[in-house]
Structure formats: C-alpha cells, structure tokens
Image 1: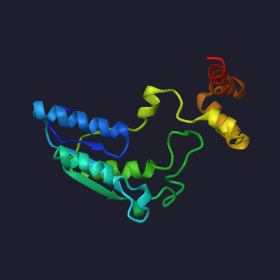
Image 2: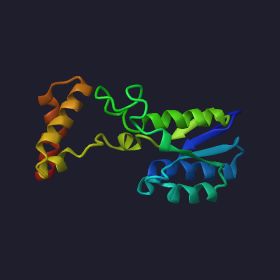
Image 3: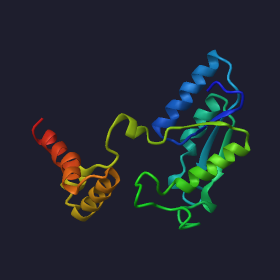
Length: 176
C-alpha cells in the first residue's frame, strides 16, 4: 500500500475483499498512506446481485472514497466474443468484462495499485467447485462436464482428475 499514487480495492460484499478493506482501514489509522479508493459494482436492474448494502458501510466506516460502476452496459456477452466465458480457462469467465472496465475506471481516477479479494477461496482451499455435492445429488452430467474442464485445465487425464477431485475426497468423507 506504500505508493506515491492512490491505491484501491475491488470491494464486494464478500469476506475476502471486506477483510482487505478492514485491514487497510486499521493500517491507515496508524500510518499515512495515499488516498485509498474502493470500487463496487452497481446492479440496479438486478438488486438481488447488488452488494452495495454490505460494502457501503465498510467504505463509510473507514472514510474511503467509494465509486460504483454501473454494470448494466457491461454484461458478460455484450461484446462477445471479445469477452465472455472461456472454456479453456475456467477461472476467466462471467465477470471478466466487469473487472476490466472497473480496472479502467480505477486507472482513470489515478489509482495505480489495485487490490482484490478475488480467488481468495483458491488461496485457502484447493477446490472452488463442490464435486462431492454434484455426486451426492446425482447431477452426473454437470459433474462429468466440470471434471472434464478441470482435467483439460490441469493438463492431466480425466481418470487422474476424477481420482484427485472426487474419489479421494469421497474416501476421506466416508472413512475419516
């Protein structure tokens, strides 16, 4: 966060980015940092997706300048195929166009260091898909598709991926 230019954060209502915001807020109370901006997505048309009711109080608590990016003109398939889900990389998908446009907005505001809580779940745990639940619920086709994508992404055989992501975890679950 030590920078000669303002820093920022892609702030959602999730625990990853909220933790970063709280940490920065606490650090700022003890040390001088340049301006710290938070950027959130505004889902006006789909309020059930809007997390500003969670992120706004955190931004206000720490007196962060807050910017809301209207996502109505940046939905996933708007500029397809330039943007959109990529079967070759399952970690680039639905929100990529929103991230790119928000990064550009941050750049336009003078922000040169931009933090994110994205993929925090990958840092603390290997799986972001719950293959066991798909198995127990009998969603065989979805399970097979997800395992095939993971095998391709990992550049390994389907059998090895199946063993690693489903069989071994199932054994640990059944025989703890």
